[in-house]
Each structure stands twice: as structure tokens, then as C-alpha cells.
Image 1 (tube, helix red, strand yellow):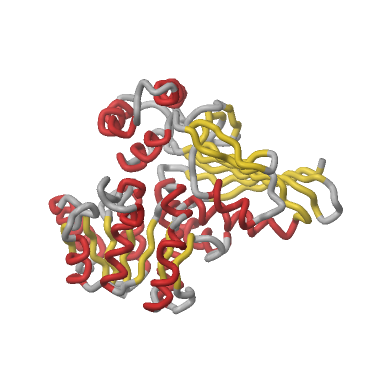
Image 2: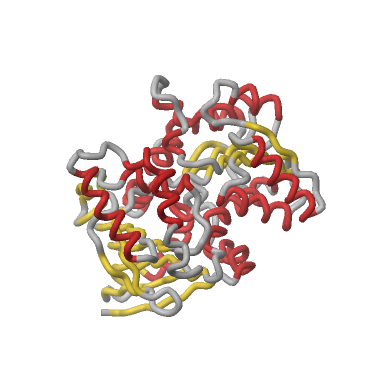
Length: 382
């Protein structure tokens, strides 16, 4: 396939491009706002993988985006250019948040993104399913750690439950692991802002990057602070699994001073003194680099599933993913790689949907094992 990766020189997009070049024969082109970064990245990748990696300048907010994608005639566009919730102009309608997807409709090509923004992912199917089916196109959003890996984990363990009632989970990257400004901007956009989570059978308000908890990952990761994050799963999972009574997701920074500092800053947004910390993303990204010598390259994810087992006994299954040596940023790119393989084999249905139920945990680790990313499991019957 001819694949265009927008954001192909970014943190996650570049990881995806490298995997596609190393393990597939697809024709890869990268694009982004900076033609210099695209050119430099394409040149290095062409030499490293002995393949011709093309590059283009495409700005997801530019008026000529539609014309640009149509003229390039890709068979698939992968949108790895976040933050996704800001991919529109204030004067445009709500659907314009999906500028890249709309351009793909005009170009009549398939679309996959790595979005993890709640509104972006939750509303995607309603915006595009009918048109995508009519054109025979596959449009998939949320091909990232959340919600796609989350659901693969739940599906893997679901047969052990007669009733799954709670999901408590979180992610914490290593401080020395590469991180992009887009990821930081996304977190800052809801720090101190109110959103809902599913608790005691109903949606209840909480605040971004607050409700500090301390989670012990054990092993190489150890104890880390965790705080509230707004993700698509909070909308999607209660609809998919009606027996659920609660869904809780938090994320954490490895270095305590960074995590607690951001939690402190979130209160200024909560009380209205700062409208949105996202505008300071560049400055805060630079400030975070002051602490780059602290912490480690080790990050991970935990998932705790609670409910009744087949004998109607209450059980808790604790699962962990561990990514050492700075390989964690490969994780959000793996779902898109899996989908690209399935798409090339015509194993995906046409239409638009979130990346839910499209791959198994075993399929995920077929790729994750390349980087020695591993999992642990512990089951308790209470």
C-alpha cells in the first residue's frame, strides 16, 4: 500500500514509520508542518532501511490540506499528528475537528489515527460511519494505548468473569523516555478541568490531574504518583460492558516533583485563574527537560479488573505491562501497525469506528516482544 504518515517525524509517528519500513514492503511517505524535519527524517530513514521514503509538507490546519492529500493519492493516511482535539479552526463547525479524516473522504483513501482524546474518539463513528461505508473505506480512530490496548486486555480476561464490575488502570512513562510536545499539550488541556468518570453505576464529575494516589508497580518501576486523566475509555467501556459499575483511569510522571508540581498547577485552572495550561505547553516542555537527569527509562501500565468469577466469588485480576530501556513510546504505535497489516489483508470491515475489538492481546505482543516489552499477571479470589 501507499501509506502517508502525517506526523511521521514525531514521537509516535516516527516509531510507526520505522516498524513499517523494517517489517513490511509498503511504500511509506511522511508529512508534517515542518518540511525541514520531514526532509531530514526521510533522508535518514531512506539510508537506514535502504528504501525510498518520500516527504511532504502538510499542515493539518491549512486551507490546502484537502488538495494536498488528494494530490498525493495515498491508499491510507495515518494521522499521528496530535493533539487531535485542536485540529480545527475556531470559526469552523464541530466536524472540522476531523480535518484529516474529512480530507481522506475527498481523497477516497483509508484513515487511521492514534488519537486518545475523549471527544475526538467518542464522536468519530457518528461523524463518518455512513460516508465511509458508502465509499468502501476503513476509518478507525483511537489506534493507541487507549482505548485499543485497554479493550484487548479486558477481552483477554473477560472469560474468567461472570460479571465484570470494575476497571482500575493507569500508565506511567519513564522520565528519561522520549516525549513529545503534543502529548504534554494534550495533558495540559484538561489539567484542572472538570470531566466525568463512571463510578458507582453513574457518571460523576472529577478534575484533571487531581485525586492524587500512590501506586506500587513493584519490580523495576516501583511506586509512582498517579492522577486523573480524561480518555475515550471513560465513555466507551461502560457502553461495551454493561455490568461495569466503575471505570477509573489515572496517569503518572515518574519524578515526584514534576507530577506533584503539575497537580498543584491544576488547581489554578480549576479555580479559574488560568483558563488553559495548554498555551504554556512549550515553556513547560522545556522546564521538564531540566529534570531529564532524574528517573529512569522504565515505564509501564497496570490494569486491575474486579468482579465475580464463574463460581460467583469476588476476584481481582492484576495485570501489568513493563517497558524498560526507553522502549515505551513504541507501545502507542503498535495498534496502528496491527491494523495496517489487517487492512492490507482485507480483514477490516468498512465504516468508521473506534479501535475496539480489532486485535487481541496476543497480536499486540507479537509486535511488543521485539522490544522486550513484557507482561505480568496476578489473580486474587476474595
